[in-house]
Structures are given as C-alpha cells and as structure tokens.
Image (cartoon, rainbow, N blue to C red; front, side, top):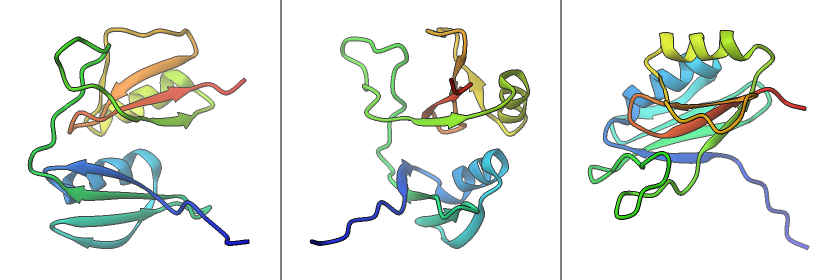
Length: 122
C-alpha cells in the first residue's frame, strides 16, 4: 500500500512573505524557504503552512453571502486561553469578525482576509 502524508496547507495571497510573517508571529513557526512567490513555514511537530502568490485572490465573505466569494477552507487553531490568543492574533494584524457562532470559538481574519478559528478544545 502507498503511504500518503499531508505535509502542509497552502494559502493563496498577493504577498506571500507578508502573510508568512503574520503566521510566523501567530504560531511561532520557522521559515524553511522564502522567495517573493512562495514561502514555507514549519512547526515544531512538523506541521506545515505555505503561501503562494495569487494576484487574483479575493477575500471570502463571512458569514457566507449570496454572490460573494465563498470561504472554501479555514484553519482551526486550538488554544488554552481564548482571550489571550485573540489578543495575540490582533497584535499581529488580525481582525476579529463581528459574527461569532459559538462561545468557545473566535472567528478571526488574517491581514490578507483568510478566516481562521481560535478555539478551546473540549
């Protein structure tokens, strides 16, 4: 049987180095490689997050709205202190969304408009 291993999630962005700086601040990941069109970050447990240049990137609507760019994916980030994690994200340039569907989750938008959730695990 062939072995398959997910190594990274890739986010499209008009400025890969800038968005990588935000996630490096947020997650504490290390830069593995960087050029103007492609950046790779790696976490201490091997998690990968990469960024590729996409000049036509459009921010998704939240909550979803007819006729607007739909969110196709998002990152879920477990935290042990929701308030502190939100403050840390905001200090790096994130914006907290107005609509929040759950008490133990905060929907946040990175500086380029990707949505991610900070949440308290069960």
